[in-house]
Each structure stands twice: as C-alpha cells, then as structure tokens.
Length: 176
Image 1 (cartoon, one colour):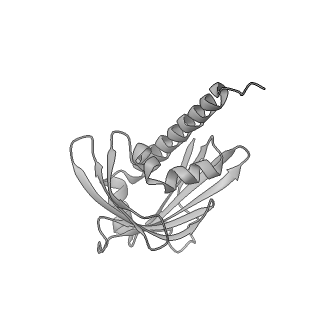
Image 2: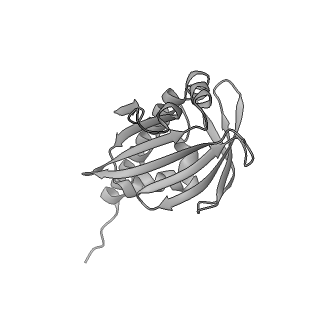
Image 3: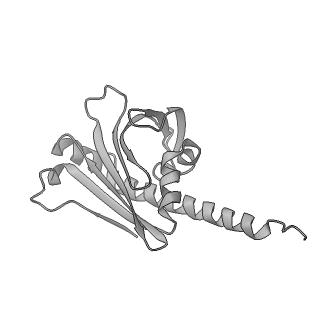
C-alpha cells in the first residue's frame, strides 16, 4: 500500500516536495539491489505502460544513469540521474533531470527501512521551486507515476523472490 504526502508544514521544503512510500514484501537487500543494478532497473522502472532504454549506467557516487523512458503514446523522455550518496542497503540520494545541465533538476532521497521480512521504501523528492513541483504533479502526474513505479518495483521483486524460491525447490540434491 502506498502512502503519499508532504512533510510537516514547518519543514522548509514542504511546498516543493513529494513523498511517496510503500511496503514491499521482500528483504531490503533485494529491494536495494533491484534499485541499483541496471539489469533490474530496466525491468520495472517507470509508470505503467512505460519502458526504459539505458544508454549508460555507472552506479557510484558521482556516476550517472543516462536513459530514455518510452511512453505508451510513443513519446520518448530523455532522462539523466547522477548518484550523490549511496549507503547500501539503506539510502540513495540522487539528482534527476533531462540531462546533466538541466536547470530544472530535482533531488530525491530514497530510504530502505527493514519492516520485519518486508521493506518500507520512502521516496522523498524536492523540486527547485513550488511551480516546478506543481508542474510535475499536474502535468506529468508525478504522484501517480511514483506510486506506479514503486508498485512495479514491488511486483518485480516478488517475481524475483518466486523465481529464487522455485530454483531452490527444484535444485537436484546430490545423492550420497
């Protein structure tokens, strides 16, 4: 179940942020891995109906992910992310825009919190201005898109878990 909201009104960025969270039925190490390895990202990244083509990917502080999101209507969206902080398996901070020199980049911090056998992921995005936040929400449906993206992540890691469980159950045992 996803929850959406903003931080408390006294927070200095409350009118410029979007916060989305979701409980994912998988250990945080697996959720973190699905978020940090390109072989996984291209399988679930983006809202419903979108696909992703990676041009380059280097997951390290200062590294970048240069990619294109293909919309269901055929529109291509040039995207670029640089990783600003990586604390496995707890936290990722990134800067996201259309290109390295995009003046309208936004910052996101993702936290991966253990919740028993599950993981609570919180995605906090802060825009440079209230107007940019409002445009992202109204024109680009950032809240719905973020919810769908985390739902796609949840479905993907559930599939990974089932595949791993299936392999473990069908692995031939040695005869002794």
